[in-house]
Image (tube, rainbow, N blue to C red; front, side, top):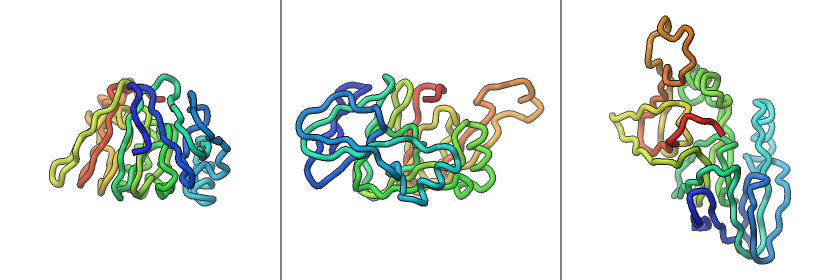
Length: 216
């Protein structure tokens, strides 16, 4: 495990020769050893095609490549940090939620419309999240950011989980998502609460939920 929690808002990563990490630019708090930090031209998000997709959506999040030998402490904006261990699964997470992750993970960009059809696109518009989301797949660790800490909710076949879209952080596994209305359209007039919608996740996997409806 390359990330070790130091407290609820900071993690420490061990960097070894021949391996690399990606982190959000400006997230390095301190480091020890011979470690280098260089801008990632493609943003670490699935090469040129992934970069183009994110820029079309206006969602490119600047990242840096971390290499060398030593330890690095990461944190950003005082946000709570949660470490997700992947064992071959795919993690779906918004780019601005990423604090740092293993460079060995396969990175990509997914169009939200491909998960939930039109409702996937509606979700992006309603929640303020874009139409594209970042995917990380393989064996490794990811440090994500949230407001007020994160809890993990299991998703089981036949037992979907409903989440306030504003509290959603990420999910992993074979999970399908769709947006549903919690109240009628007539009752929504004049109301700005995100609770008018629910994000329904079904299948097999895990959803990560923050203890706040506040965006990063």
